[in-house]
Image 1 (cartoon, one colour):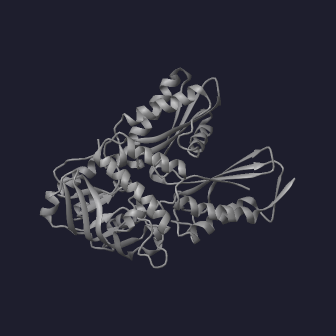
Image 2: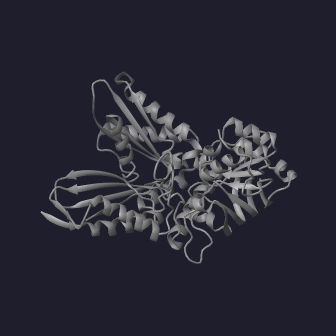
Image 3: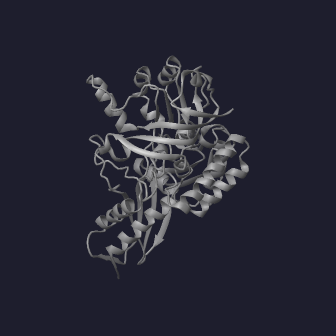
Length: 174
Length: 280
């Protein structure tokens, strides 16, 4: 089924998503990948607050190429989600709403998605030029020193994704 | 003897890094068109259509094809009659990478140490493989390698008794494990024989061969064709969401090996199999 959804999503919207749905997202999402996840984990271990409020938000596993003059962002496709698996269940249990990436997740992550009524979307890997056209605003909001791995707040319009893991335990990859 | 100033190498490497990350080579474009025509799944076709559109946008608007503009892997074939002047060749190559990645708005994806992990902020150093060949030319081949697919690559130290069937199983195992992570439809580089490092290097070099061109060795050509069919029969499909096209090419290189061994290197590349050559 094809759907248009405003993000962040309410709980019912998430519950209604099913693996295989083709979804266009419009609204606000955040980026974070390996180094940002490691830092967030270290902050949590020390009992410190995260640099962004992740509750009900969507994290897009992505590190863009630099923007040319006059452009919002450079190439901006998903990175492999599996490298974040070690950090993900904890973030979901703390209220993270959903994730966008590409590739397989561990059983621990899939369990945490069901437990927290979350959802894991895939964007098409290697289509970073095309996907950049759906990003209308980009701003670094934390870990600026990490360069491409900084946390960015993105405004997206009709950003195309596919539901891979839904809140009912369905999983699209074979 | 022919003298070449290393500044010429810097300029070539810089412009090649920019071009290869924005414009996919004709052979790979054809391979993607063929994939689109062959794909039976509707969703698979839709994804391949997006990948084709992505290539058009990348070229026209100068946005990198993929945000992972890779670690620069550079093969230098140096004619033995060449004398380099003007400084260190290796420094000149890395200066070319630095210039290309900074001036070309390419992503800086290299960290200075595998454990400490500070970004070098200019994508250097490159991984450079040198070979000395007859003649007075220098051939530079650059293939920026993204790590979504690099991470799914494998080396298998098989036994001679495992034979060709063992090699086939190794390739299928690596591709199955890679699945959606490696951004299919993939290109598979395979190196059979040599030593531990030689098979991996052959697998990497095999990725620079034009898609659709086969090995000159009859049994290797047959292996390439058979493995492409077997991989496509796995049904992984574009983006790993199911379909009849999982790989666009299987390129195999071979080398003599030890009586006790059968090393097999499998270097997996995504659909953005970037490679560019220039002869100076």
